[in-house]
Image (cartoon, rainbow, N blue to C red):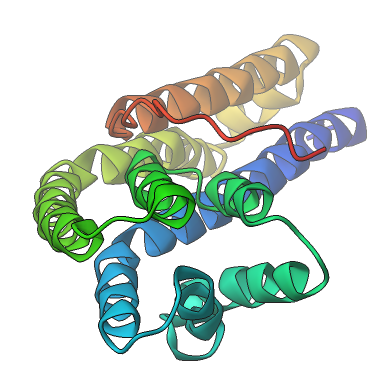
Length: 218
């Protein structure tokens, strides 16, 4: 294979791998935060029942909350102690979580903090039960349709494994060393990448619409 083709393939594949890794990491963190919400709500309920304020309860989550959200609530507590407004800091949490279910929790807390609410704990109990059921259903659907992502990986790898086998034959190796063969390789690579991302998009579950959009924190 010619050096130019090698360089072209590297220039195409390297940023794609980087993008996939960043996107996968972000998706995993968002999903982990979302899955931690029922536990977060239960801890908030426990704090409120013990006589703590909403702000104090949220600050405590930086130490006793699920590990995937501790940093977020630690930053919330730090910013609040430094003079930040409760509503503004909650909006920053909403941006971090980037989840419609989290928006429901934070909007409930905003309302309770601003106007008080004797039914806050009851609402949080109902929200916790709803989120637990929603997470369980989405996890089951994700598991059942996980074969689509596996198929995407297999479909992307299989042609290149076949190419390696074909290159063991002298005639095929010579053919792919020609200019037209190099062009076919590059076109095949681009088609493989496009098909892979398309299948990943098909396998992704639709996100719930965020009715409560966070305010601009810039």
